[in-house]
Each structure stands twice: as C-alpha cells, then as structure tokens.
Image 1 (cartoon, protein in one colour):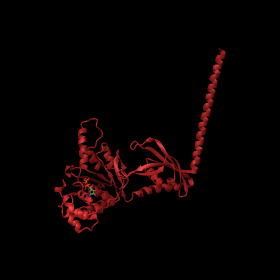
Image 2: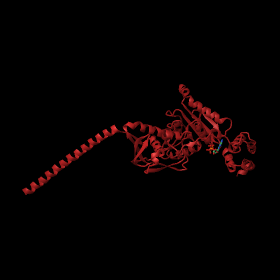
Image 3: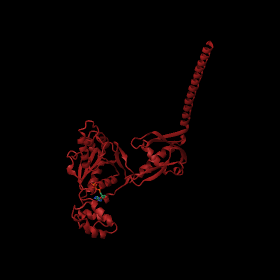
Image 4: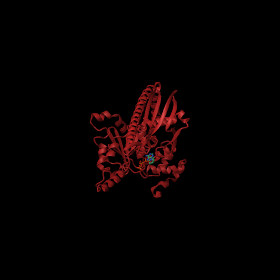
Length: 421
Ligand SMILES: Nc1ncnc2c1ncn2[C@@H]1O[C@H](COP(=O)(O)OP(=O)(O)OP(=O)(O)O)[C@@H](O)[C@H]1O
C-alpha cells in the first residue's frame, strides 16, 4: 500500500515537474518568438519601406487599374480577370490584375514587391471580400513607391478627364455608376431663346461668386427646375451643362425603398465635390413615396420613410451643403407643391417646350451636318406647327432616314399628329 502511495506521488511529482518544464519551454519559446519577431520587425523597418493600400480606400482601385496597365503585370502568369462595365452597365470589358499572392515588378528600375491579401470579412454592400495590397521596396527606393501611387492616381483621374462621372445613391451613400460618360456637347442640345446660355451664365456666376453669398449671409447654393413635356432635352441639357463646366452628376433616386429622411439629408449634403445633384421626375418620385408614407403612417412600427418635410429639410436645412447645385426635373409642374419650388429652394424655373419650327430646322441641320439656315432644313420644319412635336419624336423619325435628308422631308407628313396614331 505504502509502495502504491509512493509510486502515485512519484507520478504526480513527475507530471508536475514535466508540466513546469513544458510551461517554461513553451513560455521560453513564446518569449523567444516575440523577441525574434521584434528583432525581425526592427531589421525590416531598417531595410524595407512598406505601404498598405486598403480596398476601403479609393487608392486601391487606382492601384489595381495602374497594375493592369503595367508591363511586368501583363507578362505575369498569376493574374485575376476582373470585369468592368460602361456607364449603363453594358459592354463588359475584362482587365487583368495581379491575383492574391506575391508579385514582383520593376518600376523606374527599382524592384517593388506586391502582396495582394484577401480578408475573411466581406463588404455587406457589394458582397466582395475586403482586400489590401502591400507595396514593399528597399528603404532607399521609398520614393519610387510614392511616385507609383501618385502615377496610379493620375492615370485613373485622367481617364475621367473629358468625361462626366455619374454617381447614384446606394444604401445611403454615393457610388460611381459604371464608367464615366463622354461629354455631351452643348451644341447638340437645341433650345429656344438663348436658354442654354442663360443657364450656363447663371451657374458660372454662382460658382465664381462664393464670397458674394458669404458676405451677405445668403446660403451658398442654387436650385434649378427644368419642366415641360417629355423628350425635349431636360436630361440632355443637364448632361451638356455638367460637361461644359467639368462637373460630375449625382442622380438621386427617391424611389428606392430604403431612402428615408436621414438618408436623403446625408445624400444631399454630402455629394462628391464639383458635382451637380439631380432629382429627376420629382413629381412621380415623390407622389409614389408620399402615398407610401400615407399608407405606412397607419403602421406604428414604421420607422424608415421619406417624408415631404424630410425632403424640404434636406434641401435647405441648417446642415445643407454649401456650394450645392441642384437640378430637379418634372413633366408635370402643376403637381408640385409650392413649398418645394419656392425661391431659395428653386432659384430658376425653366420651361423646356415641345419643338418650335426653328428647333426642328436646327435639329435637321445638326443631324445631316448642314448649315444652320439650309433650305432643306427650312423645308423640313415648314411641315410642322410650333410645339406640335417633341424633339425626341423628330429625332426618332430622322433616325429612320439617317443618310437621306430628302426622303425624310418627303415622308415627314407621317410625323403629323393625325398620322401618328
Ligand atoms: N432639345 C433637344 N436637342 C437635341 N436633342 C434632343 C432635344 N430634346 C430631346 N432630344 C433628344 O431626345 C432624346 C430624349 O431627350 P431627353 O432625355 O434629354 O429629354 P427629357 O426632356 O429629359 O425627357 P424626359 O422628361 O422623358 O426625361 C435624347 O436622345 C436627345 O438627344
């Protein structure tokens, strides 16, 4: 029995002592690991220069695009295909970018190591995993990495020069929509009475007179309402104005279910710099929302909704973004509440009517590349009365006779309202 107790205590002691030794060894190893990591980090910091570029930052997109254009990446065998679309979500184009893992490139004669890392967390909006790219080089070459990033930014931004970037609202914030659009020339939008020039001058004067507004304590923002029959160039005019003034366009869609008072306030007051805010078909968007709100007001659980006063507050509340240029369009001005279009919220109301004879003639000249007062153009327009047809109706008709102006004139009787139905 005594022997048994002795053996047991021996085993326990042995267990304890080996536990302690293991603990010491593990602890020792841990400490050793920490120290060696620390030393390695110190050496790394002395030898290498590193920059982390996170996919949450704009520079990630710029860097990937730059890499897709770089010679040594084109030669790599370890690439990812990524699809980019044009501004209407069509014409997909595949670009090749370095895949997850290690890559080496030469930039201005310097070696740069690229490590693309994919995170295990996801962006809830797009469903894409978060990523980062680590750029490393020898400490002496640090300026090369900085220059590379600068070049990547310029490459992407220059890509947009001469183009209009379109933003749309998505889950309460602004998101670039497809590839930037080619600028629509102001000449291609044909309007009456010098309207284009008046509008352009008004916006230019607004942009250049910030201090005038500030000195008088007037909120520095300008609102425009374009109204009139559909298809006469309201959207085209806004696109052309944005192009002429090198501004981007942020399209606010009020019909999205999730847009509530808080979101609209945030969106209208946090538009990307140098952009026009555009609310199209304000009557329809709000009418549907309002009826939804009316219905929802009976539901006590309702917490998210866009209210009329929420929209008005966002338009001119104390937090309103300064320097804001807002365009609203409607085909039914008579449906709009006076409060929405009162001075201060809408500073200029511009009616864009159906085509006059003059416009029909100019559109014809523009379409067939004829001089302004060409007899053919006048002959074509003499067939219609003022305000009888929309510009898009005339354009649609001319498209059928793309190479034959004479035939277009001959057949133009078909465009008369009696023959349209
Ligand atoms: N004044 C115009 N000058 C030149 N083209 C025009 C004009 N108006 C309309 N068009 C042509 O007709 C088409 C529709 O025009 P646009 O979308 O700008 O009209 P809109 O007034 O905004 O219409 P809606 O009210 O239905 O949105 C475009 O392809 C455009 O090129």
